[in-house]
Image (cartoon, rainbow, N blue to C red; front, side):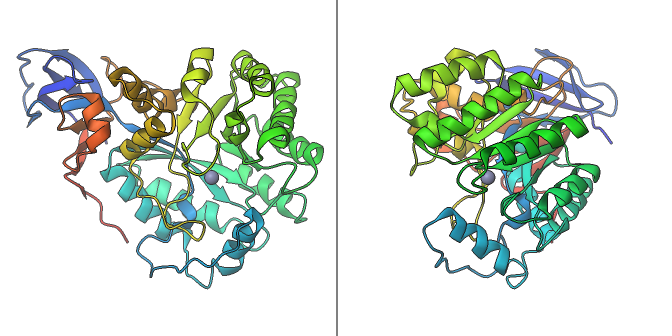
Length: 399
Ligand SMILES: [Zn+2]
């Protein structure tokens, strides 16, 4: 079902006030003093800023602890500690992927997110439990948010025999994207890991979105192997590298040639703008022509107690991490969480132009920079022309 609605007095990207007419879920007209066609509801925009829906381009819907008792984190410092701890305790902690993904999707939506890319664990302990659960949520909450799934071998691919077969089944089940993870430091077999995940991409004609936490020289080595395969297999524009901490290495001799190739092969980068790790330089990547998106990553899970699914706050983190202070720079940070993210997720008809799908957020602020800096809770969220959240309250109830 798609809706029609006349928004009066809204300011696209904090510009001049206009009326915005939505018909059948799409933006039909922008102008002044538009008249409402018969039967079309009118919403007073009250001079709010209107932006396209926020894009959560990297999260893990299947394993949030939202709504569950507080989890006391006593997990060891290594990546493998976190991976093994989560896998071993998921059932005990009752982290039901269907319920937990519904909770997080509603939270995301009421904060203004209209599109989510979720990595979903595939492992020999739980099989496709996560994939099936998130697919249930995707179908049940289509009215408030669009969700796409990445089949994600969180526990490693080759170090746990049977995982590749499950990944194959996850793609057959309808995952849109193949995932991968740290080819050197988790599987300790970069060629084997990358051949396997790129092989799945080839078999199913699907893109790749690979987690690459590996730092410095090791990460740069893995990234180089990813670039090489992207080129040889003709996957230009079909690869995203998530985190890519190695691009935060302050060594132009190591990084600059990689950035050049990322741009040439249209390989996208996802950064959460982490406070605790080296991070890809957002402005430098954008200027080089690299698509770049952002995401919350895990929200309140066994990895970390942090996260609230607010992509406006994420834009602030992008700004803080990249030392963005000028208004035009803060706008860049918001772009990463909106239009740039939409490019990475290849969302069709996204934006504020006539003909675009009416996935919108209204924000009471004077400027974009103020909206990012203050993150007002009084937001109105519109999905395909229908108001799906107001002032932090969703039309859907969390299970
Ligand atoms: Zn992640």
